[in-house]
Length: 313
Image (cartoon, rainbow, N blue to C red; front, side, top):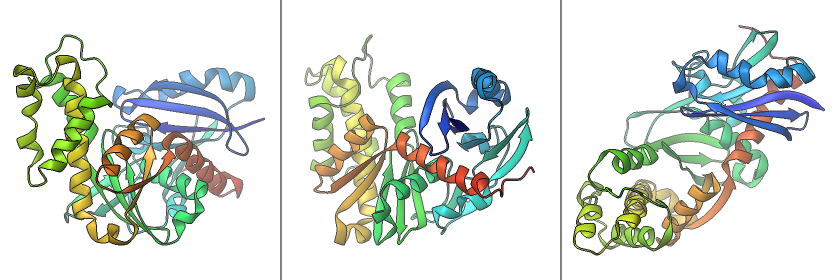
């Protein structure tokens, strides 16, 4: 029986789940992200069919729904903190006959002593802890790959700090708006021999910066060493390879004992990061990001509504 609606609202995509009381997804719908504007209109358009069948159900959202260009601006919670405490910063309000809760993002001073923020990944981490309770004990370096990849230090269940790499966004900009990849049909831009070759280049030249490796994507095509169709995959390998290399340097003290990274993300992208980490002799534990997000949203629903502490703002 349907009990609530859960949604992970990214910048470019929204995924809503109609869930039973245990957090199992009964149906799923996708829509435009927060950057498209008119968050309220898009949401109610997507849930209209569910409302007709079940009435307006409590809704729990995470991600960019709580940003300055989302539905309601929800302040960040400061690290260090335990992911179970995320519910304390949620904003609850009434709209369209239903109670809506939007989870907060997190902020920190990162390893480079710069301000850093996340929205949505904190809910995935909460869900990952529910799905893999062993993560609550000991020190773990987490990697959440995506448009803005997050490298997170989790110590005895406390999210201490994190570091953002604009990996996916940089790849997309270079792929579509630079001279590095000029093929009329880019083809598959991830994985394969060209991707592995690029990873090897980042390992072979550990002192090289990404900015010095990138033009090789173009020059190797000109010299016949790289096909136009494989250029996107090669570029992906350079960007991911340098993201991994930089993170391993910055977190080398934390990795000295475990030599493991927990990767939480979409299966295909997680596999690319797992390949890059394995090339540097780092073990990987993979957790599906979608499943982790839903588990985290279910935990928020239980905390906010299961105990009757949800309230309108």
